[in-house]
Image 1 (cartoon, rainbow, N blue to C red):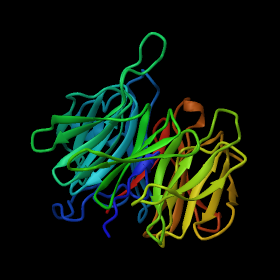
Image 2 (cartoon, rainbow, N blue to C red):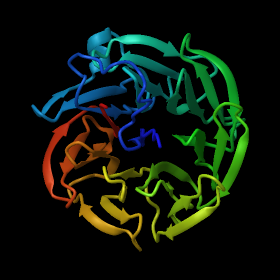
Image 3 (cartoon, rainbow, N blue to C red):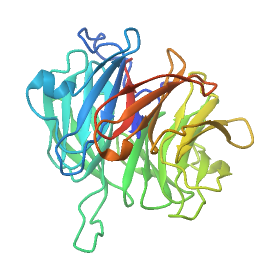
Image 4 (spheres, helix red, strand yellow):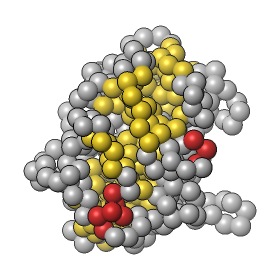
Length: 350
């Protein structure tokens, strides 16, 4: 079964796992950035200083703000997420209301998506179409008009249709020919047919669902932040055929909405505050993997499936450069490096 992993991205994703798209796309590109790890740096809201950093694990070399370096222009305002499909990387700029497209090997610009977007968040590609989650617009009372998925024809980057969702659609996930979406302002995950856009099912779970992950048994998991200060987050396993809840693991805290899996897909990783948690999808309860005691607060998490290392980032209060620490699967620190402002997720080259 083909899986599509994205960070997102987190949250990533993270990006989820490694932000990989279709396996049938063009050959792997060449260039200075064809191999390694991209770090998505939000920048300061309204500051226009979003950026992408590139880390080469072989040489331990960091290249910062590579979009501006290559294209001679600023990336934009608030880099929310990034997704790789074929030889293209899609960078979603939330406050700039656009998606920048580059060849991920050279990072040279190949296009921009702007039509029909409203507070875009995350993106997934299936064939010749991009699916982009949008919160929609806020009124003077900070109420959303309509959240939706924008469906874009990648031949000319034009909007072809919109799929209405529940409020605050955030992370999206392509699995088994279906589009699963997490509506972060609600307690729902919705599943849509990717071709007809028909709503196939709605799952009610803990408040504030976020990133998805697939385990070794092809079960779909989603992490929920819970109610504000309610200490009622959860991990939920959803049946991808019936959309019923197969299993729910309650948490006595409010985790971040980021969730990644290891290469074997039998361990899930997430965090809250400065604590990284590990959960066996066939086990009972999550356990503490590491405490990042010198962090202001963990802001992103990723998993390098090639080198079997965990990446965690710290925005350091958004006062300047952020930092990234790499850990072994036992939670032992390997090294650290500095990146742009507000690193929120990691994208690993295919």
